[in-house]
Length: 342
Image 1 (cartoon, one colour):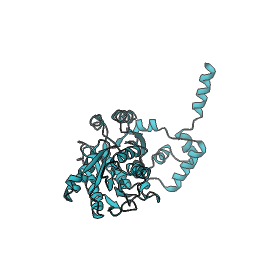
Image 2 (tube, rainbow, N blue to C red; image 1 turned 180 degrees about the vertical axis):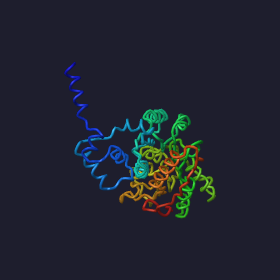
Image 3 (cartoon, rainbow, N blue to C red; image 1 turned 90 degrees about the vertical axis):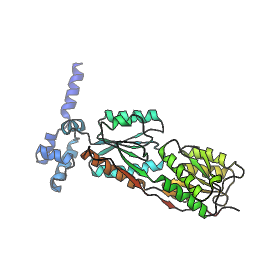
């Protein structure tokens, strides 16, 4: 045991310290500390000297010790519903880019559309003493308590009190899809509803409202589903087995739309000659040449940047009034929509 303790003591003693870096770079410890915190108040020449010395010594700042001194960890927890959906990945790109510019680092968790996992992930972030939370997911019941501890920004869900919100105008997006299809002569337009959430709710409302405005009340068809490709496939199989079948399907996201494409292909239907399909989110999937999906675009990266701005403002001023930011979608027309079949 004595030999093992001695070995550990030597290993700890061998770790370079901030003093070692300062001596190697020929500067003060306080200046090294400024560089490690990313302070702009250091000349580039001295910054490079400190970074060079740190690399040579293999020095890494002690984040735990720094957080105890500063009273903050500079960590942000980001919880998304589904890491398999490219919409969430593209949103996280915009969020991380802005957080990095503010000197903050991002931790990512997935709720998997499950309230239990959502609550568990939020609790884990709080245990890590994050400086704030960004939720792009179904909001767990524990969020109200979490918001009392740290600043919170919710994205996509609008019926949440006491937090800043960034949300797409889902009703407008759905209307854009229906208006486009009606303009192509479609009157049997079906909608696949997403998993239970305010996002799915307002997209359904937008679809039904648009159908009524075109006097197609009796043609409204809503098939229950979720936000996954497999869910889109299963819902499309049911819709396309109807007699008469729909001539167009409005999906709640691009993943569901790809499932609809698979179902149509399996049934020998041609897109858009036999069936037109509209997705939502305009992710990179929609732009792939052999997919070429007409899709409602919500600015994912911009939403990430706005969420970061709202969170940083809340961290700086916890008592400021909460804000709801509504982003405006637009329709991107590609090859999956065409004139209604006779």
